Image (tube, rainbow, N blue to C red; front, top):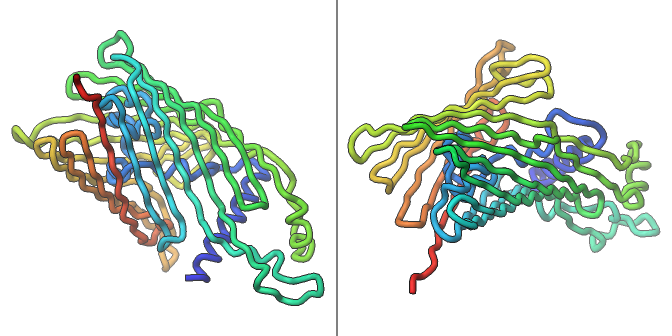
Length: 358
């Protein structure tokens, strides 16, 4: 377990440094994981149907559809055998019949990483009492405003997003960005669009060179300089259709496509600079009480052991129970690397609170 912790922590640590030196294709990737077991169980196909406190992440326009005078959402997940912790908390409250505001907090971190940079004392002797620990953590704070328009079924929302990334005493960054989303309902159809990082999100990195200098010189590495990390815009489009198989059985599939503008990616439709990544999610409900969910995403071409190409698809599954204003959701999702299986169990809670009537 210590070896696994060291390998994962080292990879995350180096990724932080590498990203700060240029404008990478993948940036702030912890904000691409998703929140809430409902959305994760449907493989992230949410932009058209999301209608609760998790809308601050998936599509801020959906925040106007939540129930209650105060909506609360919580999620905790552990990845890589508990090495990495992933947490979400959200709040939403209506201002009036057409406007809603919300706040979302996201943290993804590897904690208790051993810092051995001061293991040797002044005489060059190993002193284990000098060992310390630190965290490599990413934080996001989303402030959401959503409003229903005068056009029936049309609503929009916007996020002001603050990102903070920190690697112990070695490096830290602050960033700011904007998200914009819309949803439109027509009969049994639902449509959604989400512009993530529409102005690009800029993370300004600073490094503690005094802390790093000795170790980097001894290992022959170049001392990093302060710099910018840029997250380029992404467009997410989605559509869903809800029908009833019988009086109490509902069936609602949703298709999303993620459109990126940073060059070729390993996705089904790729070009330079635009690539398109499809997702499919399905929710089957019974009497608005219990829900069965599934989805597929992360469709990629990978090399097999014999050198031939094969298509890899990531399936996800989920269950949900709704008791009055309380929803408990579960998802079984694969967060391993492409071609491998590393499933995690995700639980989340959504609650709608109402003021007591006098």
